[in-house]
Length: 251
Image 1: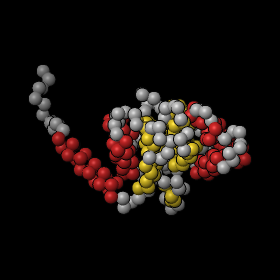
Image 2: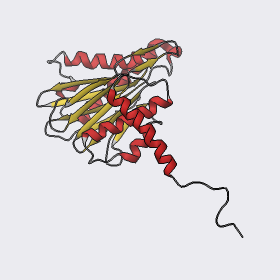
Image 3: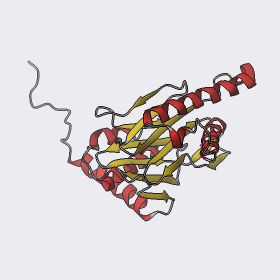
């Protein structure tokens, strides 16, 4: 399983992904799920992947190959004029890759090959943008009503983001919020695991502002995990007590 989150705030984009993949409890590995490409002063594009590992790696490999061929006309990452077109072309690539693998494997491969991708970035002269691409190749864009996207194991880390997100929050607070979201997911689901990859992209910089791999012994993550647990217990005990004996009995 996987957990990846992309969030857009006023100051830019904050992205985080786990690195665990598994084919059963006895076959657990670490694979990067976050990849980025940039042209200084012009654009930065980041993708995060979830789904069948062979499928997502095939999509990323094809994107990598295109960036190595600057004269190629359909170089989606380096030449597309808008992020919308970037997301559209990545969607086509996802759909075609899945269709090819299912066709090659026949009935045996039906439903086994899937991929969801978060696409984030900015092109000069335009706003930072965030998209979620589905296995069918279609996609949606983040908005004021939906300012973040999750893929993979989403349910455990979603409540904290919904309660604490503020579009005007600092990049540092956005990182803290995602760290709490990932800690909650890690506590609830063993198929999501450390290390985590973090990337911060500040508006109009067209380069990675901050990048970090958060390992098991990371002091900040350990502090967040411990303090968040203590804060939850304190908040729980501060809530009004429930009584089996109501002050106002029904007539």
